[in-house]
Length: 193
Image (cartoon, rainbow, N blue to C red):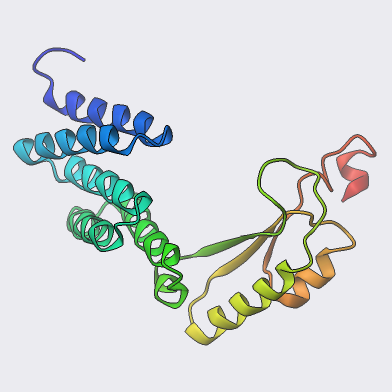
């Protein structure tokens, strides 16, 4: 970053904050994000400011400070709506939805979502067997989505194959992720489809 290029400095501060966030080092992440926030305020750059607000909100969400997280994400949303930055609006809306979902307030999260993913295996690696208890979660969420009136895709990922797909669709899924059922050493992709 060239000396005097404050816009580049603000962006760099945010990326350094991301590194700390990924490591779970929240105080350090918050320090860098807040420094970027102050620089964005100084520059009067609403896009930089919105990005920094969203980043600060993510740290608060990860630490369970949901009211603070919502405050920052809602401020970011107001700014990106003002500058008509549609990709940033999608990001801000998603962040608000995540905060509600983290508090098990799913009905409040739905207006902010276009797609919900239900994992029907233990996270970590491909090729696992489908966990049948996931069917109940799919059905409950499908009912909640239908009652909300929102057009939200319900995606199911994990153990989806030719045997499990009919039950997953019957439970209410609209998008299926089939990784190792399609990509494997047993047959070609064409044969698996």
